[in-house]
Length: 212
Image (tube, rainbow, N blue to C red):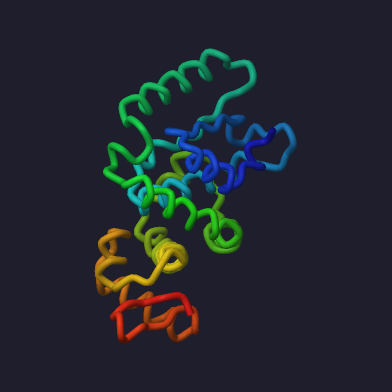
């Protein structure tokens, strides 16, 4: 299968099922057999997803993409062995990162619920093309990318997490802040915005927010 067909949902599903790391192997850049340059798309998507992993508190090194030709079996073996050693070093998903399993599941579900939106953003706003892997990595390490990430994705993820949490029961701002690891001011901003949209309501008698 061409790496260009790898979707963010595939990665999220793997992590949601408890996989500790995801490895993607593809053809070398600029050597596409089908002239679709799907490996460029895959690299773009993987680097974006690594930013998302870091944002929710998971080590981005749990996701890796490497490029090699079909005749380079030794390169493939070395790459996989290196990745396996790294995952052993990192340990079980979420454990070394100090994430409670229920919170981790909620954060992964929030990503899953935004899958269509993430694909749209990656295609329409973050799609770039460089000849080398280093070019992509430099772009994704840039201040401009971080600004776009905060503007387009970070707030959407936070709201998705809050809405999932409120499906369980009403919570105070402080409780939501403590569970999700966001500041009370961030939570208040998101709750006020979603309240104006009619998605949540404030229960004055209980000092808690609930789904509308």
